[in-house]
Image (cartoon, rainbow, N blue to C red; front, side, top):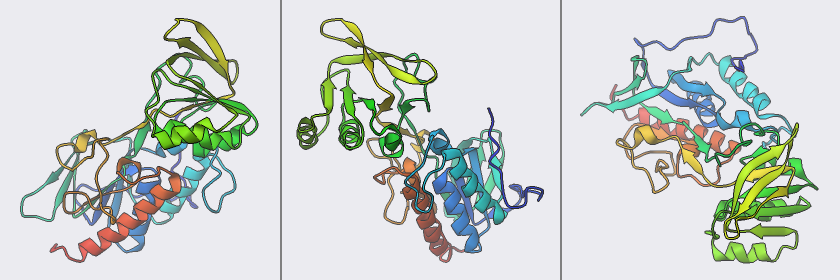
Length: 328
């Protein structure tokens, strides 16, 4: 189902469009919290800015409830994104949606950047903010997709409070999985960690986990299927040593096996780290002048909605300072 998020205070007002003949001060690539807030801050600085996005909302659209964004006690990810895009639309920022980036071309001895789309369109700009986000690694088992948002979650911090007093399952054996289990154990009845091999987490985290009496660990155990009715009720697993298959009950499954930054297209242009995140400095600058990055696609720690939004604002302000030095 396609969700129309292109909302503002005046729905009848004609929306501005990206113009290939315009030379932009800034083009933002990405339509999540980082990209939208970057565009908002840039527009308020008086910059000629446009947004190009495959879709608006990003991972936030898959979040059933947001309860840790300052100023809003509780609302769905979709509702939060409607507020974000409504605010941006108030400033008449042009948005080109449902288009994918092909390349960013840097011209020698020129401050101009060329943004090329897969449909062949090209736009010229003096700066770019990349805010393409990331996507969670999936287990790839039957039922995972069907129960996404109905028990299957990819963010313990975001969705953990929804399962207070319940029994939940955490899939994974790295730092993020163990940290999620420790946090969840504070609010749920029981946490069962299921991991197909041995722990890869830091020993200090494993030691903390071992002190919790409402956590059960099942290593060398593979999740075969997510089961349920209207909502998830548990998972089918296999003990890899004995070959036994059985069910683990749980109202929620937190898949904590890492994220994949949407950075593939920039691998030959920008410096990436070992996790393929774009390396940025404290201002959001990448390894290429005039190109900045914000949010989950970067090596900034703690991937949270409010931090991505803050990243976008920071990059926009840094871009404004950068443009003051550019010979246009």
